[in-house]
Image (cartoon, rainbow, N blue to C red):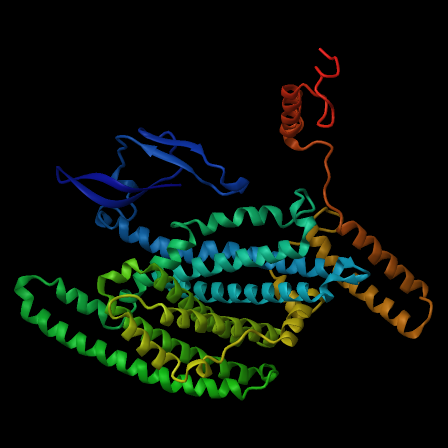
Length: 545
């Protein structure tokens, strides 16, 4: 199905240039339309190519909505974009996150180094815990965004946040999977479930000028005016016609007073909630998260505090006027804070809906602590670098409101090592959390070569064999026949699953007469030097031809 966004349409005998949206379902033979050659985005199955047209006549019957909707193409385009980038691109990242967390978590338990599963190494535990909490935040964000769209809403700003944050989280999860799988992740072939995923992730990231543009311009550039409760009406009053000048002045005065009041109230809430959040954080025990109700209560208060901090900062941004659009470093930091706050609320909403899964509290706590730390650090960086002629004043007000007692009122820190180890254990050993991450992950039938499926099936066998081996060492006894069979099966699975693909010739080398570029280059170089190898003397000196 091909969409043409800008079309010229005859109406009532006149030619009006209207922005409309039309559809040409499978009309490759439509006069004047050329569906050209395709691109190949990083060898991924991503449909991308050229569509060109010259003097393309589009009948009124193909205008979406008919003649009554002529001129509304741009509105439809923006609405589709808001929903598409908030749903389809994050969905790909969630698929990658579920797949990588499930398979790499199993691989970390199956793979042994020095006779110990690498899942017991601290560095691997850190990587798997980060992958687990990033995956949970992505899944939570997608669930909430889908609910918003299902409610027939098209939030432009939140869809931008989802696109930027979830594709970035997906990239981080895959990169950590690559680090854990190491050599098996770089040798392409049927056994490699990470290489092509790692290579294709930038496709989603590059949409709309890559995440650089989404983060440093689009999120705050659109959101600051569109989402502020009073700024949009104030701006519209400035654009009112001369005939409505008196009404416009009244509207401007009213909205300006509301903006000032909004800023004052945000300052108050920022200070009071900041002090309260600091006290609750400093007095909270490390295992308080195990009580689900207290987990929700604590983190809701932290997000309320951070939301007030962000709202105050957004009000201070108006001191920049039109220059704000050019302060992309500031907007990028505020986009980080907003994204972390949104994913924080999404993660709590997800926990409220799915609580009861054993281990969900630990992964939720890990994710929330990291998101709160990210929002806090982004706001701190914004305060330290607030630009503009009034930057020093705005920076001082921001520090007083967001962090009234300095570093004391910046209480958020990274998760403790004990929590990191617990989250890693949940994703690298059989657990309800692993079952949660494996939801909707394809598992091939028994006997079919599929590395992810084989890793998932091998995990419980290898864990059981490790328990038997530990029991044998502890009790200083010999294994029973059944135990020997389990250990032998686990060893066979381990040996098969750590193998990587090898080739006599790469697919590009199959053609007759093919010579590897490196070998050809070496041959040419030796010919130039009149040598047979780098260690030989020149052939002339040796009496050669």
